[in-house]
Length: 197
Image 1 (cartoon, rainbow, N blue to C red):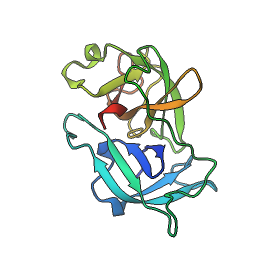
Image 2 (cartoon, rainbow, N blue to C red):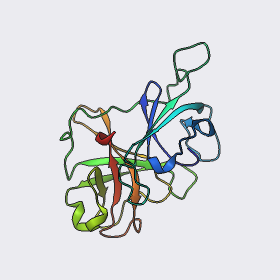
Image 3 (cartoon, one colour):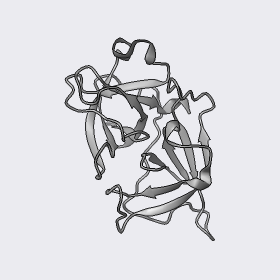
């Protein structure tokens, strides 16, 4: 996915933003457990892509339905798509659209403008239409810090918005799609909700 991000769902599937991919699977490789943007680590696995499924109603002008599933190639002589790797864990898919609510704290991760993977805690915000007017569409979620101290930014696209429940299980709640003016007051990150796939 170039230098974009995604989240591993388990098996042969990665979830990312539609604007991060093109329907040409053979031109992509997924790197798992990559902490330094331009340098693989001993735990990094590089897996070819078998198929890319972009949401059928994705609109690149409005970022509506900005989500895609990436199917990984199976390892030769195996029905698995990845070798066992203790540095890679799948995230859960939520079981309810009400599982997490405004004011819940979740975590975003991505490259941003740096060379090292970073993460930060952000707050789910309920009245996103107030901040984005007609640009905030059905299927979108906003999160961040209204004071502008913490935010996702350009370079984080496709990265996960992960929320953790009271039992400690992590769920993908959204995929980083777009935003304006990173880390400024009243400018939040916009995520595509997981449930529109």
